[in-house]
Image (cartoon, rainbow, N blue to C red; front, side):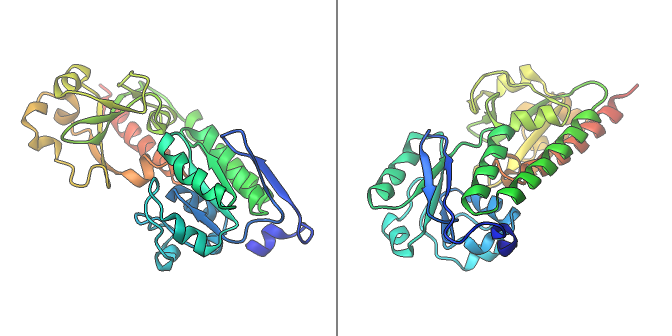
Length: 287
């Protein structure tokens, strides 16, 4: 796949994009050694058939499986900068959106490394990031084709929506309850799948009390399972939630945090999964 991506590019061809900090990211030739400080970038590279470009991973990253043998360079916000420098990447990828994420970026750039910072809070940003990574790796055409395929699938799901749109609650963490707000990609996944995020607060993550969940009384209750919610307490075992419609109707589901909350190629799978849940709710709720 890498050879196909580079086909048509002259030897030493320069590639350049503007990242989401508004900076020009320029390489004398397509990247051949990449370190991603956020795991979804590894998934994008693998989706484009370029996992072989990855030379390290952060401690929590497990996908694609081929990176498990790569050295760990710390965490997304606290990477081991000295180890990164020793691995001599020609491109480092970082996720924007948090001021702490820029600290390692500045450190690495001051020492001569090229760093691109991309935002991925929604599907348009995800698609733009995929295309720009494609450009930086000499795989621009393949990236555009992959984005077009994903757009077509989302449109197919959107156009198949019928019936009442259920109100959905997405639990990020419990206890100390955190929910997905309007600015999260989860909210967009809900909309594309035919539902509505019942949490209307315009933040990515929203702290709520249990009383507010009872007031919202969602039709569908989703609990993510992953690092932020490692052992989701089953909804029937929460006495305070016994009056929820979603509990009475059996419309509560555990979903994979990596699929639903991490923007990346698997976000399409999240829409597929939730679309099936929504269709099940619609069929169940018909008189």
